[in-house]
Length: 81
Image (cartoon, rainbow, N blue to C red):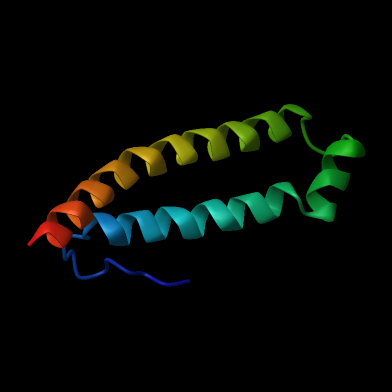
C-alpha cells in the first residue's frame, strides 16, 4: 500500500482529494463485491455492516465535497493569473 505522506510533507488540497477519491473507489468496490454481499445475505456478519459501509461512503463523499471547494477556488485563482 502506498504511503504518500510518510515524510510528513504537507499534502496539497488536490493531493488530499486524490487520496479521498482513491479511498472512495476502493470502498465502493467492496460495497459492490459479491463476497461482501454474500457475507451480509448469509448473515455471517451483522446486516448493519452494509449500512455502516454506506455511511462511510456518504461521509467520505461529504468530506470530498469540502475539499473540492478549496481545490476549485485555488484552480480559479491560478487561472486568473
